[in-house]
Length: 109
Length: 117
Figure 1: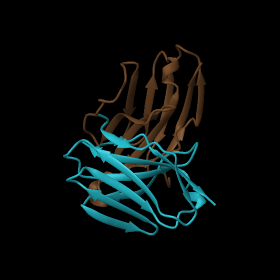
Figure 2 (figure 1 turned 45 degrees about the horizontal axis):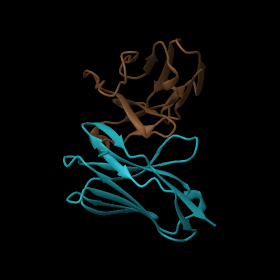
Figure 3 (figure 1 turned 60 degrees about the horizontal axis):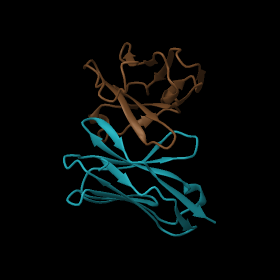
């Protein structure tokens, strides 16, 4: 079992819709979780971090964390074509980040 | 500087040659990380420096890989006797002290694309 798992996609949503990206992790002691966005040919860009159970909202982005279920998600409201990218889920493990394989999101105009 | 910088942006080398990749972290950041991203692979942790502590080298794939961080700032990742499977994008990230913000938020540089022929 991989330590951090994501659906590879591609996930295709129409412009204006909600995109839902999911991530599960295996290490129960992990305390901090991150979502990075990576455009093709570019390096990862941090878009959200979450540490407590529940929801955390930042503009059109909402991160959700459920430690009991070992589940992290990212919702993107009012999706735009510029949101088309690969979204990487990362889990802090002993100071280093363990990444999932990423979910490719495509937002169609 | 405003962000993490890395050099060179691209490096093409022949199998068996040694290469050095450089990372300049965000000014004042105490922690520095190296990751590798290969085609079809996820981001893979390589090594982590935190202040004056001994580095966490647990992700280095072989003894051909080494890294150092001089003066608590700039870091160099060295790959000796490069192999074709070393071809990847090598990414550096830095992080500030925990009290300066949410802990372990890491910010990435633009990466060095290494191609071993």
